[in-house]
Image 1 (tube, rainbow, N blue to C red):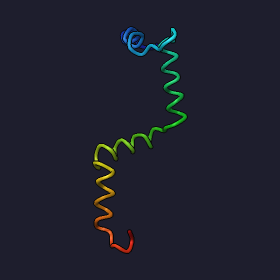
Image 2: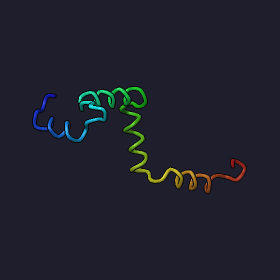
Image 3: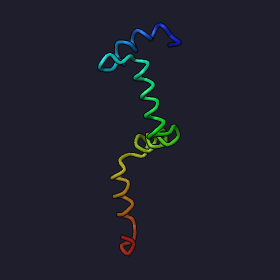
Image 4: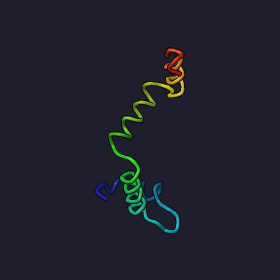
Length: 71
């Protein structure tokens, strides 16, 4: 690790089971992120959730305002 000050905390709180070291676990997390997510998409999704409100409410309000022949 680059920063020895936080290395002790990572070793304590990010350790895995079966004697997995925190470096290995962080590598697995990064690999999982590369496989299932990407930076812009994840950030955009969080933005949508946090700043536009409930997706269910948004859909409800949109369909409520939509003409009946479109539903």
